[in-house]
Amino acid sequence: MSKRLACVLAVMLGMLVFAAVASAEPKVDSSQRLRVQVDPTQSGCNSVDSVAGWVTGQDSPSDSNSRLFHTDVGTPTGCVILFSNASNSRHIVVGNQKNLSIQLRTTSESLGLNYMVAEVSTDGNNSTTEDTLFLDPANCHHPVNGSTTWDRADFTGFKGDATCTIVVDSPPSATFSSDATHSAFQNYAIAHPEAVVIHRYVVIAKAGDSRFDRISLGVGKMYDNDSSHAVSCTTEASCS
Image (cartoon, rainbow, N blue to C red; front, top):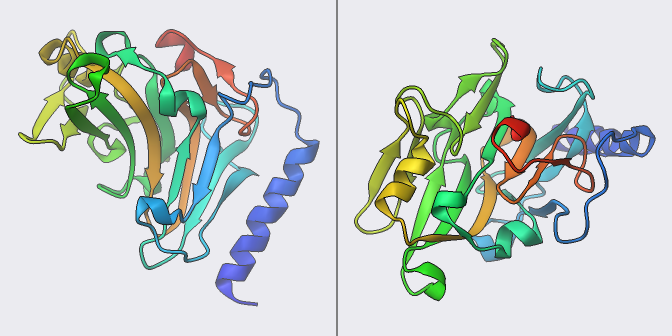
């Protein structure tokens, strides 16, 4: 049995276990269901048999349900995209955007490969001028409850020092970092008060194994068990 086939079967087994794992969270409607695209060609990814899904395993210390989102991205240049219909279409003024955060294994942090994206219309809802914000956990990672294996990247809520940075990859490129009183995203909002966030999604392109938990796409839900159930969170504190 090939290594990749064994991995595929392991993930499928984990997904089958899901049927017997009850979720404590309410079921979400179709607009909030977490959508998973594996090796989507429209995103520039190669079809290389990547694997993605919720499995049972040693998850974030913030959880007690032993559920995590696992990917095994194939080479060359496979990828997995995570989004919901709400995260892909809901327009929120940047100053009101909350809960763009994710937890991940420290071994899953990989600069420029596993990251969140926020696409922003800088001229309100007209969408004629856009910024692409790269929210990379490699630039914003803090241990979860003192863990040495799990980090949390919180781009809209973390403040206190300059250890969280987002990159605006739109001419002219720029960076915005957290400080004593504002999160990295808040500092972007201060510089762009008229801007509106129009799309939010996660890109997973690190080859091989990556593991995530407590995925929040900034539209009121956080996924920590499966794609159809979620924690409701409208404040930073409720989505930690």
